[in-house]
Length: 72
Image (cartoon, rainbow, N blue to C red; front, side, top):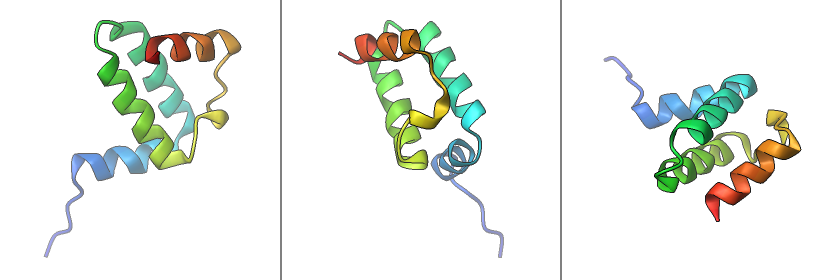
């Protein structure tokens, strides 16, 4: 019997294992999806679920401020 991962399981595993990839995806989403804050919120929720937070992503203060602004 094959054990396949769902997309969500795969995404959480990759976000948990690779802080650089999680940060890059967050930066890309911040830059590209400003018209739909739900996409950004969903990604942040997945990162927090996978990593326990965003503190280890080495985001600059400017990026953190942009993220806060986009989510408010």
